[in-house]
Image (cartoon, rainbow, N blue to C red; front, side):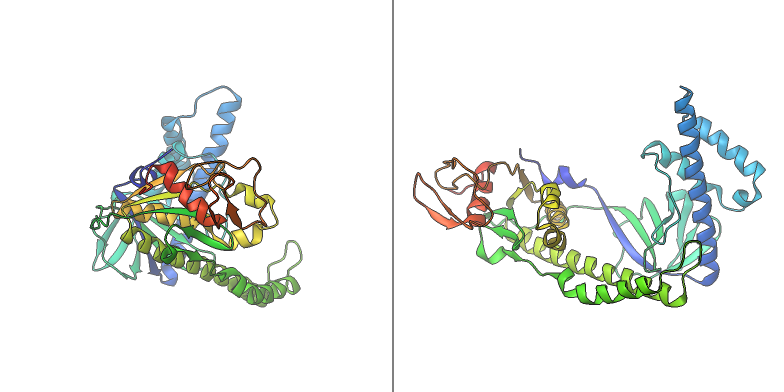
Length: 366
């Protein structure tokens, strides 16, 4: 199966995320708005489940009526803007009905054009909330929606959805096959584009264990608030997790940009990480972040007008990239060299699999 990158990543839209500088007054207003929207979502869930149990319909009209009655009877809800609350009703129809609980990384509000505006470089949200955006780059177009949230470290962000145009790169006449692995995240048919395992998580493991021991020693009893030391250890743990995630993302994007810049078409293994979760390599595989790297590659291909052919991984380690012959038995993971019993070719196992990707995608130069 071959799928174009444009179809995989949703051509035409991109998300731009910026840090927010939020005053103490705005923090209080945003937290209150988030609590209202969260209560409303959970109320929609409850109404929908009751209606389902009674074999009744709970459509948008019924939920709109519920919102009107709730705002009329609850001053706390009426203090907030109706714009994000109405957006909650619209979003509920298109998402799974799961209860939202209070958490540090919770979504506060998602607003469409009528719910926000820009003035003097600041972002003004419905309800009279104004925040300062750290503009690290310019938006290519006026955004169609904004998502305001706070992550696990306590930092505030605004994520804008913007219509984007494909930045087509000049043709190179080259193709590449990519096989995912654990020792090397990506093994390709080009030695210059292999991606070694950076081991970001392993390097941070010692510090992470230190903060987790601090949290364990200071863990509060059930029903009691955590101490200042516990909250600080928890914040440092979240901060370190965030740093590792950003390192992985940065490595994936830089590698993906290099691959896409140098090749017109990519034959990529359609990696499914579930089988690794049941193996002894689960920790190393999680640190490799193969799924995130694959996503970055597909998105980069879409952005620059390249074609990404996703190849089903079945038997890719058993086939010969030269003659197409298949071994009678699957190779054990400890055997890292592939030797074809038909044509006699011998090469590293992952390099052979990368060549098989090209053959199955119909991109083999030969």
